[in-house]
Amino acid sequence: MEPIFVAKPMLPAARDVHAMIDRIWQSGFVTNEGPLHNELEERLKAFLNVPAAKLYCNGMTAMLAGLQVFGFEPGAEIITTPLTFAATPHAIALCGFKPVFADVSPDTLTLDPEAVARAVTPKTAAVYGVHVYGTVCDNDGLSAVCRKHGLKLLYDAAHAFGVTVNDVPVGALGDATSFSLHATKLYNTIEGGILTAPDPEMAHLFRLMRNFGIVDEATISRVGYNGKMSELHAAVGLLNLDIYEEERTFRRGLRAIYDSIVAEIEGIRTQVKQPGVVTSEQYYLLVIDEKVHGRSREDIYNALKERGIHTRRYFWPVCSDIDPYRGQHIHSTHNRPVLETVKSQLLCLPLHRGVQDAHINAIAEELQRR
Ligand SMILES: Cc1ncc(COP(=O)(O)O)c(C=O)c1O
Image 1 (tube, rainbow, N blue to C red):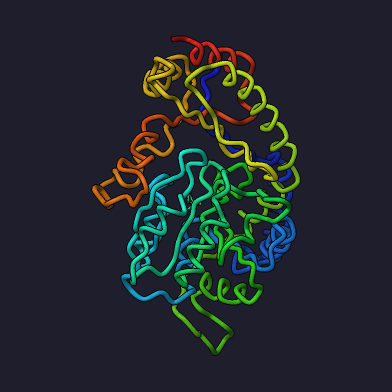
Image 2: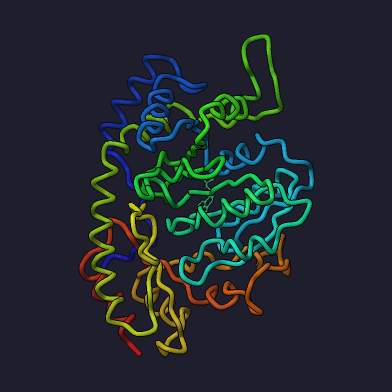
């Protein structure tokens, strides 16, 4: 049995990439919003069905731009979840703001609006929700808190490309949403990101941020950086857009197989199924309750690793346990935050085309073992 990892990049055929490279070399346009970049931006804007969408060189840079365009005061507090990749609080901190952690809801594992309400202070400028594992945040609940306190609502949708909620695209929720198009993401441009908004006027600002604030040859209107995507990455993005749905359908099938295994096992559950939501198929999450199952997340992680199946304990360590934010309070409606219990229960299984029957059988055996 071949060893497998939690992610395997979806890549176009090398000959198709070579043909694209020939086109790029002939045109002489290799970056700076070239023709392939602009074509991809238009296609993704249409695909994501959002009024504003601007490409970036990676998800992190898109996050920085999303946080910077609203003019929050230096030192402003931004409420976010500790159950996310370090990029989320890092983006907040790098902009000169303070990440403030609020607890997650036990079922969805996304930001709990009631916990968020408890974290609001006069210094709070925004709430930064994460559609973690592709599970959509409680947008109604978070919007209500933000409306009440006059806060912006931003989303990190690094795991939620292609998600819709009752036909509403996830990139149109809140005030701005960033996506990662990194190689570990189902839809990827190898390195890349995109920033979206429901207000078409935001596109202009998003564009300024990624290109040094340049308006035209004679005008630089604000502080910006180089967040542009190159033609090579855009070429991969265009080719990947053509094979994306096929890959997502494959992963949906694999999810159904994993679901049928997990359904039979007491003490292990997966992500909640959200009615009306078209899923991203980015992750297959296990939540392992050792008290009920008998084996811990670590037991299962190590046993699978020995058999060459490399799962990931996303997101371990959680952001409130890493050096820059260690010991920071987690605002919660519970005496002991939900996060403190779930953080040692989470395991992501490989969800990609490399997974074969032998892997699935080995995973089933290890999950069933008591
Ligand atoms: C939740 C989350 N936010 C942000 C990012 C950062 O995206 P990128 O790697 O494209 O900069 C990631 C990357 O994996 C992520 O998982």
